[in-house]
Length: 567
Image 1 (cartoon, rainbow, N blue to C red):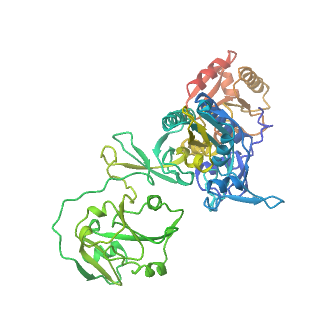
Image 2: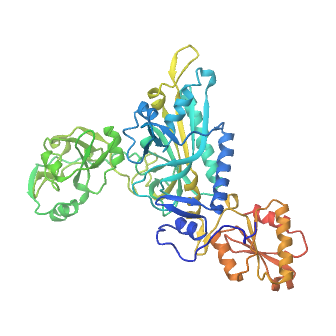
Image 3: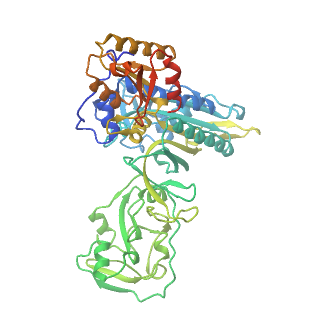
């Protein structure tokens, strides 16, 4: 490819809309342009990268027994109504009507469609397992699209669905996909961790997220430095903190004027925050819920929602709190409330605690859970913190941020039962198929690679997914000898199937160097009059700046191939 023909309009200034480095660099380097909020046009450089990621995904999916198909983006409402998700998926679903008034959606995911497809074709256990996948655009009406391709309204995703006759088969499919994902992200040169995760709107009860580690990641993860445990903070399960038993002191009400926060209460009473219990109140489709956690802990809303089996959870207003029979800022666990009261499992192990007295400017001291509290349930509902004990080995966990690039789910029979996708087993008994689903964000993977691999000059692409492997820069296009050697190098690399760009533009060498670093070609070959006088051309490796001199007149291809092989 000649740079004079390459459609890659680079920018010198950072667009005001760009927040994270991948967003900034993909705009500046001419990889994409904004079409609307959360919607982008992929320019040729980005499309080449995406195709390479897709090819890696295809190879690994095919090797793991997947078969590629393509389903419609527009899905009829009837499928979603049959599964029960049409009215509960939420505002992220793009809904539309055709001219006949029939409802459709733009597919945010394809569980309903693939299950409906397979139920019409599979009749016997002999036809199982089946693993079908597609690589296709998905659509979600994000409340707040941001960070470029990280959270958009339109994105490219690979989604595979497995159908097995039993849970043992699902375990095999799940492990196969888990291992394939590990190979895919390794081939894309990502630093990543698989972590235990919540299944969210997809459903099911077993899931892992593949997190690319990056400071810009929206998700927090915890991991154990001593064992293999890693989990999304929303999913990480915690054992209760058990303290030494204490003699039960007498329950008292004390004045705490204007002390509406745990920090203020504990400071006023000169007590450690670890001896306090705080309350957080939520509205949900299951009713009002009061969650009690230790004063220095935070509520894990995902765990609360899962415990309740609720479709939504939101902070309650002061009016709802008053209707429950208590006072905002002074809510406690003593006495009956007009709400569902949920205790964190660590609270259940505490003695002689400080908590709200359900009266303005008053708190209890020496409240004891077994003796004084009235509650409906005890569960692990707190958010894991750094240095909490690992749920596997007990070592203190560490925190990191991550970008979710893939997720694998065990759906079991959630969709097959709802959509009546059944088969006849060896004994002629009709059973629901046991399902799994497995997604990879193709566009997000491209962004994640950049978030991990860049410097102040631009992108640093790994060879496996770089748009082009090599750029050749003649320092002076008007110098006949320089152009003759540049053309010779270019011709040899093209013949050897190396993806190469010859920057034949009539620009200063400095401009070409800046563009080459910004775009992130793994290898830059510079042909200049001074190096030609020394009988060589300069090959500079993008990721570390090291230089290899290639002798003029000798075969360039083997030397370049060797460099690229070792990158």
